[in-house]
Length: 128
Figure: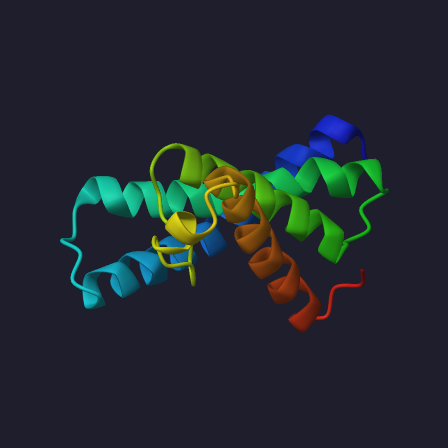
């Protein structure tokens, strides 16, 4: 299977999971007091899909082999994008940046989201 056909098939397989995860993230937002909006739902589904789709070319370059490193890099990329457009960083208080002004939010966001993606991959049984 060629690089482009592998990516196309891989991305098709990512959409159902992105729909489920986007729904769960939107539900968690609503339970924490955020107002449900179609834009928030679409954003959560979209970023979940992008996270999954970013793994596809890395797998294709490695002959289809899955790796937790791919998930870490994908999570870090999506995390940097989320923080750069004004999103929050899980488990990090905004006061953290007052205490440590030299820490750049985008880099910390990439680290946290990447670590979450890598941890989920390891816990699901992907090799490093």
